[in-house]
Image (cartoon, rainbow, N blue to C red; front, side):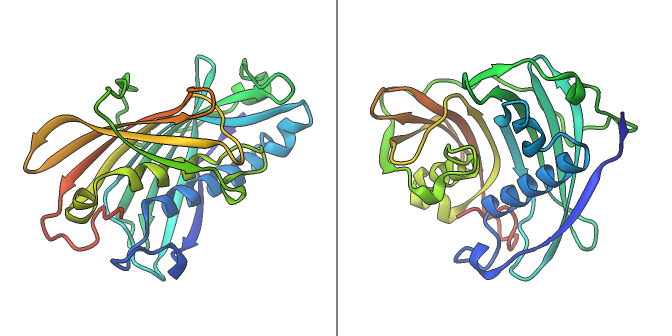
Length: 262
């Protein structure tokens, strides 16, 4: 099957803005996920189609690079396309633009197909693997680096998964993890620096009422212009790591609403 990239327009609403009057990064991720689902439905590989075979899409990895965050009431365009199969994962890329065409974010996602009965990863079905693009371009260079473990000197924040955090697959939605990670970064960093890149590996599902420890520590000292943090979300009941992540924060040099993520 030969397909072309899919585009969809969205509006930034007041309930998606932060205290600086710009969209949170999580809002862009919600819209990217919405566009991906709508495109998958057009291609015949929606969550409803997979559920007929007892399967489901699960996000395994996400890397987001915000460049500029839109203000409330702005319209943005999400462009997304399937790149193809990489092992047992299916790659889908994204570019988000303002109305003038300028790029405000890039993202790379890797998805797996899971058996709903066994809750285990399956091989990508043939009807999904056959999807190809006329243009095989990617949104950005993506090394798919190995993320380090969080060391014993981490700062921890405990929370409990709410019903509002759970999606139709009955597990915590991936964007909620991003919210928790951003909230775990020291307040002075979130106030004075801008989120420039975040990579998340989704390892184990979590569910309603799970108690979760969000663990964060600096990966390296960095310099006056950037800081890197590593993160680990651990379920307290069994000690299993749910998500591992890395975030890069850059100094705010007075560029307005560029990359603000608080």
